[in-house]
Image 1 (tube, rainbow, N blue to C red):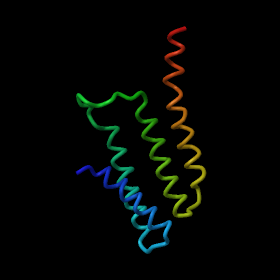
Image 2 (cartoon, helix red, strand yellow):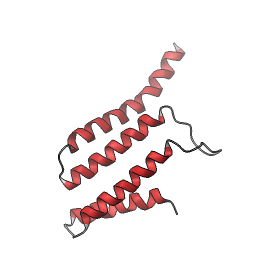
Image 3 (tube, one colour):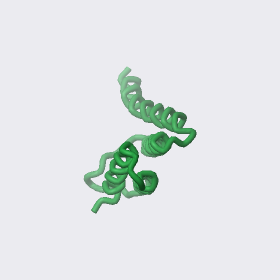
Length: 109
């Protein structure tokens, strides 16, 4: 089984529990987000295989996704700092998506 998929499914179920105000929602959200962040962090140290996709600046992308997941958890749990985490994470993610096209245009010119 894929641990990351279990973590993401747990995160979705935890958010559903939190939305419906069911007991245990906070524990599910926090535990599953820790699993997702841990598995995303391990992606940085994994050896690329024959079917893997090569990413430019993988640390930048994984770091921004971790900030977005953490910011989402903070937002759902109503903890302080959620807006800043989401702002930084989504901004870095947007910059990551914009950098490769800008680099390819500069090489062509």
